[in-house]
Amino acid sequence: MGATGFTPTSTGQTASFSQQSQGQFKSPHAIRGCVVVELKPCLVVTTHLGLERVAASRIKEEFGVEAEPMPGGFQGLIIVYCQGFDVDLLTKELSSRVVEAERVLPIYRAVKADLEEICEAVRSLAPQVLGESESFAVRTERRGHHSFTSIDVNVKAGACVQSVRGNPVDLENPDKIFWVEVLGDTAYVSVTPGSVVFRKSYDRKPNVLVHLRKIVIGQVPYLADAEASYKVGVRIGRAVQSFEVKELVITPYTPVDARPLAGFIRGVLEGIDSRYSIQTRSYSRKVHRVPVNLFDLYQLVRDYRERNIPIIATSTKGRYVGEVKRDVRRIFENSDKVLVLIGSREGLPTGVLRFSDLVIDVLPGVTLATDVAAPSILTAIAGVLAEESND
Image 1 (tube, rainbow, N blue to C red):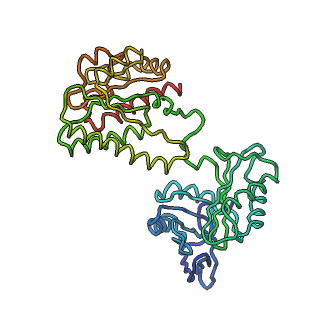
Image 2: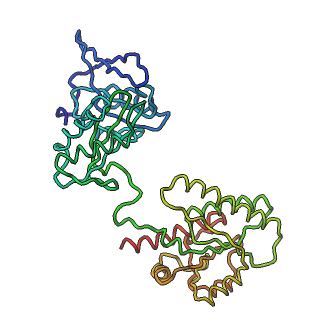
Image 3: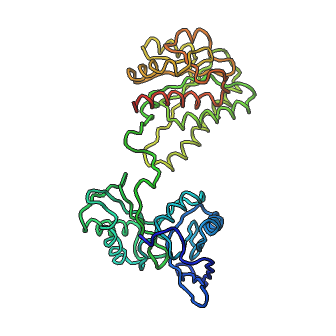
């Protein structure tokens, strides 16, 4: 779509922008000799807030086109104006050369911000961009005040696309995405491959949560002064909640001073609460809140042995996890619960290693600090299990 060749029809374009109020736009004009040519919007570029002018400047330097940051006062947006460019090629080149650009959308239609006009725009585009069996989705970003919502646009535009040849809608993994960027009184319509959107999940991408939810962490507490114990506890709490393990058991194994132990426990609980509150706001799925218990390490090991629940101990004296990954996989395949023991400062007692089903070292040659041990060990185990899931 657009003229062929990635070269402007004229060099030395000088553009001027008219005064704008929010939602009202006037295209810039290029002065070519004595002729004033109105430049047309050809791209909508989104960027992080505060980087609009930086990104616009980079676009101008790289391609010699006019780029208007924050059109109509709308943050996070840049409108690129050009003439004589292959819009699709410009989109591809800009995406690969301007790192500040979050999303680059070629403008195929610019219409009044009206549901019927948007409908006609996508209806006319559909035969040109959609194969007979390709799925699609509609994504709308609306800025300004309107009598309709973004959902209204998605529903209306989706129905109009389907009316052409009945293509299936796939909101999760579409072959093509119709983008409707509504800026004040104008709606810009674009179409891109669905692959331009980075997704958290896709077919055959392993989900390690099912394995992590089997893990009970037995963590020997970090005991120094109360404040240091508290800080390490916060980091461990945030880590185990990030992985959403089945349970955390704090496991002293000798008589300890109550004050630093109390600081450690307080830090763990606060770390879990802090991370959990972020997860519940950010995730669309239900979040598992990690329960915390206190149990003597030796009694915990004895209890799990008697109930035939597998125990994996972690130690610099263990086998490299990459060498025993089949054993790790076998344990998780055959068990609903797995106890993973993590030491602190002096490591785990030798008797505990002897009573474990497997002793692993996740990073040979490196002694992990207590506050990073849990996330490092969980990452290593999850990596082994994810590799197996994807085989």
